[in-house]
View 1: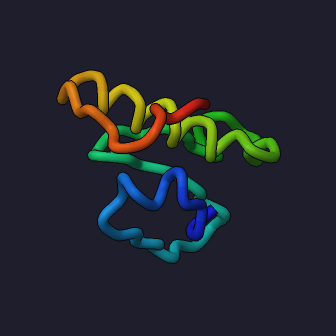
View 2 (view 1 turned 60 degrees about the horizontal axis):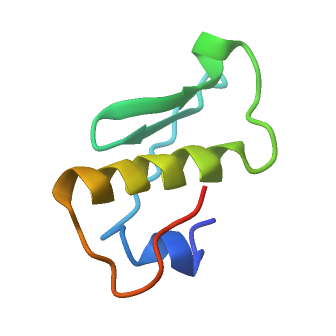
Length: 74
């Protein structure tokens, strides 16, 4: 997912923060999108990418960004 061109053009940088105890959380712009701890389960294949794309679409709409390419699709 880190090399996905559709997402890459909207993200300036990525940061992975190692933790212990099986914690896995995805936070975008301070908003928790997925928490293994809260849901008591692993992410399904493609689930994280879909959540990130939906968040980026919302950011686009909120900022009224006109993309230079077709809009993102979740």
